[in-house]
Amino acid sequence: MLLHHTKSHSFLTSSGMVSSASKALSFFRRSAVTQAQVQIPGPKAYPVIGSLPAILSDKDFDKQNIYRYFQKLFRTYGPIVKVEFPGQRPLVLIQRPEDVKAMYKLTEKNPVRGGMEALKKAKYSNPYFKMRGGIVVEDGTEWWRVRSKVQVPMMKQKNLCTYMREMEKITLDFIQKVSQHRDGEGEVTLDLLEELQSWALESVCFVSINQRVGSFDDKQDSNERLKEIRDVAVEYLDAIFTCETGSKLWKIYPTEQYSKLEKSLEFLRAVCDKVLHDTEKKLASRKDDLSHEDLNFMEHLLLSGEGLTHTDIVTFTMDIIPGATTTTSDNAAVILYLLAKNPDAQRKLQEELDSILGDGEGPISPKQLAQLSYTRAVLKEANRVMPPMFGPLRILQEDIQFREYALKKGWSVLFMNGLLGWEESVFPQAEKFIPERWLRSKPLGDIHPFTILPFSHGTRMCIGRRMAEQQIYILIARERLEDKGFLVRQTSFTCKLFHRFNLEWRHPDMVRDYKVTFRPRGPLKFTLLER
Image 1 (cartoon, rainbow, N blue to C red):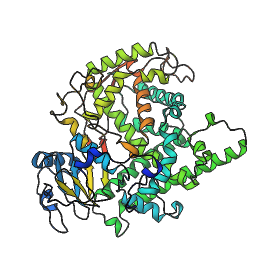
Image 2: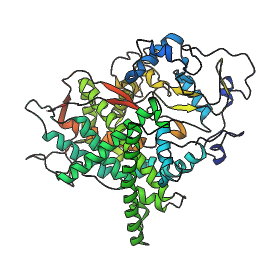
Image 3: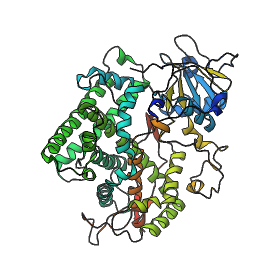
Image 4: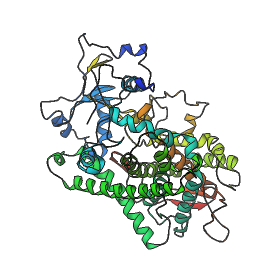
């Protein structure tokens, strides 16, 4: 359940994690709103049904592409819009980067996100979870209890570097497989979206449960197990999206999608619970022979002494698998697509890789990754052109004054800065893919730091950010070949993906659907040509 806001509204401040709001925010916030307020503009709303008549009568409303409707709302009503959906709390949309920054500051002490109601109900209904839903569904003190203990091992770059070698092997196994499945014109005959999901799943499982699941194993039983886990991860997120955006009948009786959510939840729970039990047994057998540097992620949490229970660790690891798998694979697909569609940017990326990685002998080092400035710019530009999500949501825990408007406790505020990337007034030549705009030289002018935030910001930043970025850097930078065919080699990695190949896209433009995040619509077919 949601944590009610206390008078001090500062459970994070008391732990020293977040400072108090600055005086500069007095324009936006006051302890008591006493002056007359201007009504927030937006489509007309009625009791019970909210803005539904205006929404359904609008030709631009499309649930699968709802961003188009939101764009129209901003064009019609301005940068702050209020809309009311039936059965839901009033929703305020903000877009300007200065407003996004201010709202982050106003809500930083108690960043209540809400949502995920169906997932929360499914977990609370399952006795295993003991009425605790984990950091994906919880807010307030219960969210912070777990988040504060897992964020250091999950987000510290030094810790993730220990997984680089195995992530590199996984990436090279992936590229080896897709390279073997090409027709006479060089086009990969596999669906790259499914293969990227397998690649992301393999890496995520290795980090979270210290196991590879056989994504690129030729054995039939391994392939079947992989497909089951991958399909469950996708079904899990699809069921959450349908339950969150549909009629909410699952609150009354178990609908088909809610039943799928419960089934996939139980599958992931069983997998992670068994792995954690096995890990506990291995740790017990090792006794005093425990080097901190040799600990994997699960072992680190078990031995941290931070008060996490067995159930806490299972809940956290099982949440990582579907979330990190689909978001990372979708983001990777977009980056590859945009590079394939923009050969000049691809060429500049290749030049940087050639310069820093040389002939590609040996594994990539953290130092080399840190030098890939143009590669980082490519990732930022991809997140601008094809953002993975609109932006984060916050539920207000007190009445606030925001500019000339009164926002009430309990209202939702959706940060729509993901749409800013398409605004010509914010990004000159917005329709073009120009990674150079993110370089230190700033050839197209300064960029407000709160325009593009694909991983959110502050204490509620995506906990898998570092892992996802590391996976994608390695994917872009690596390929493994051997003179007489694509053979598995465990110690020497030669050539990079874009060092060895030019990537092309010969099909209609990529289409994406909105399902919690933006999801590419498969199948995806790329062409790999020898440089």
